[in-house]
Length: 272
Image (cartoon, rainbow, N blue to C red; front, side, top):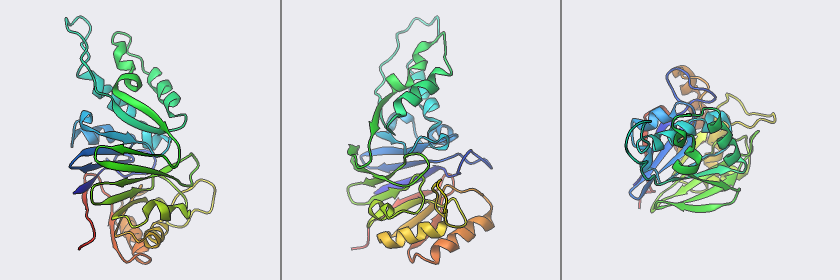
């Protein structure tokens, strides 16, 4: 069985006590973190230890999808790093595979350099010791735990890849951030669950690239998805969220859910 746990679901910065984008996908053979925006390190710590992760995949290099990689990396190092004056040696760390778009390694190194710990310099090496940073290209495929991961280029202001996670018996697709594009159909084709951003009330006709809930519903219908979970919300108000659910349900006949922090969804195969 595959499970999706929502760690954060807000577009942009955390608000109303909710973290930015971050989603944990677990199977019998592993755990994948999809995106790691502000607030996700705290939410992750409430459900698992970061050293249990089989890997992390970042859809794109916007702040609200990757900023908490630094605190997660420092957490991985902290338990094995002695304080100044302690008569112990640093412990070994099994680096967690971290997949980022091209240019991500340099960006993360510069981020870590902004906050040096001069008395404990090992903590400044999160992206050398805690993570095994791997830059990906659209179309790449790799294995994490017992899952195959496929990356699909989508349409956004920053290079963004949707992530398709195929486990032993089920498939989840996650959009990251994207405007309407035919590439969503290949990303989500026949998926048991599509986790889709639904930032806007109406279709984005500009260059930035975001979906409305109706856009997400149309993409789910075109791809033959069984279940749609809407996320990346601009508003936490019940009326606003229910209106977005209705927008998607008007064009998609399957189950439509609204992501909320802490929610856990079974990614179930089709009956029979």
